[in-house]
Image (tube, rainbow, N blue to C red; front, side, top):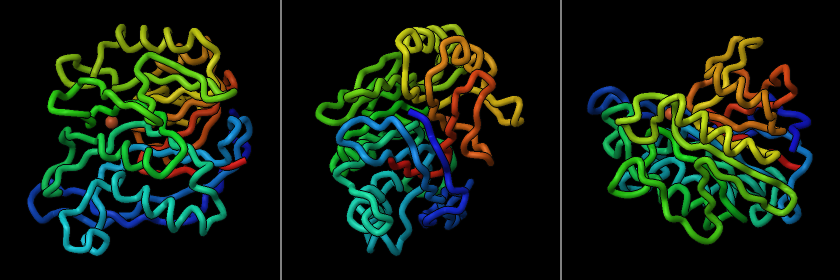
Length: 269
Ligand SMILES: [Fe+2]
């Protein structure tokens, strides 16, 4: 799978509430939606919707008097019923890639935190063909942070694993490199060993939350993850966690890296 073009002008800005550092300090922000063209989508899928790090909640206006839902739980319905059809895409032929970090505290009074994002995955799964993704370091899937979800049906969670969707092989590694006593954080050795296992199969798409740096473009990330990727290059890497001003770059080995931190990217044939 290769991205042929990506329009830097957003087709839409999603309004949301971002938590502040103390009670009442939350702020209204926007998440840009970018569109582009891609080749190599599997049969039955005309559009791929890719996102991560939607660490925000819907606005009070959109929540209609209820406690604001996680942004990732709120937007699938509007994407499917309103926005995608208006931009010329078919929700039934749209698949979703989630690259982690969809939690924000309900009171919007603290940044970070860890919470259950299962309803985000389920909301995307209800409205689209299938969902493939990984966990971020702020995601939980039940009462025990760090425990992988037990999704069924059209929700496909990856952590050192891969599988085929028609002609497309997708793999992924969850979490970040860091202190392994915290949920979804791993020693370099553990993370890189999972990455090597996934890269053993030739991948069309590798989904990560943490991910490679891009030193030629002065973009933040992990040099050791990039080196592993360049030794057995997948066609496309999707990552989140670190915000890059440039969403799409190409590594010298020819691998495209799409950074979807606080963005929604919609790629179509
Ligand atoms: Fe993260």
